Image (tube, rainbow over all chains, first blue to last red; front, top):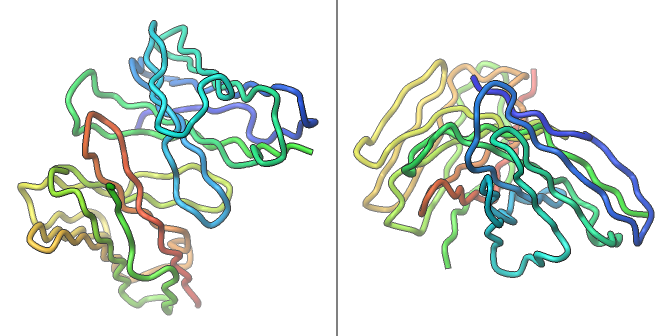
Length: 118
Length: 111
């Protein structure tokens, strides 16, 4: 299957600093990537849809100025958590789909990034 | 709003038993459903999917059943193994490629 690589897998940062997480599709081009957030023992919650060459689409309640998304190429999307606070500590996961259009396409997930803000 | 929920938060089985994990979804417009397995500290891993024009689909040791009448989805794992221990999520696609995940069920397999 297709491979999605996410980096770093773990990061610890100080409160007030910014952290960048990368999501790469290694063997396919992804026009659209998705960013999720997962708290312990909870489900994945979609944060935003990252579109190559255009602005990301954020889900309701997600601050776009807080979670900056850039999708500069068909194989790379980045999520930057700006001015991080302890409540931003979470597991962040990206996914990419092989589909160029339509709904019913399999999504492949990255390994996730464990962010801890101290 | 849209929701996809699971009946059992934790399911404990003995190795070799068959496991059944259930899921209820609320969006009748969804026509594609996926089961994912997530191990601790990792991203979700695709297990099996099913389209709404089907009521059953089988994979290797896994079977997904879809009952659109009652908006219910289930995942059956045959001969459950310790390596099957993980959290299982059902997900639906109510709109373009956007997955809505259920709350998850933890499967514990004891030897």
